[in-house]
Length: 87
Image (cartoon, rainbow, N blue to C red; front, side, top):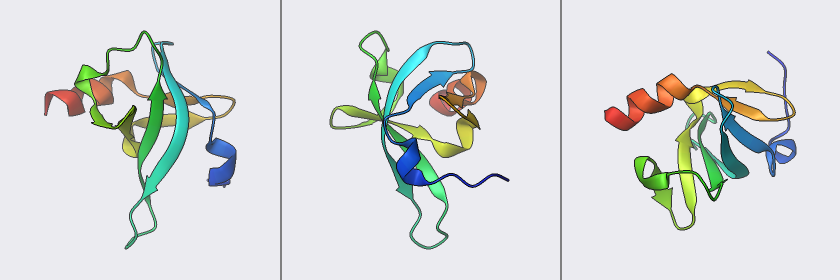
């Protein structure tokens, strides 16, 4: 697995797997015991319906296990997000 500095992730565009813009990555949440990333803290796009997400201030929290790819943008799995919202 390729290693990416967390600092390089900040300010990347977050999109869902259907190509919709979700927002800009502001920060990440790490489990202090395991060191694993648990959530993306995203400044939501103005057109995004944020009511289906857990929120913290002006940000939405997206579970890290929904991330499909990290490149020029961060792509999250639309289906996994929907499943977690319904749960």
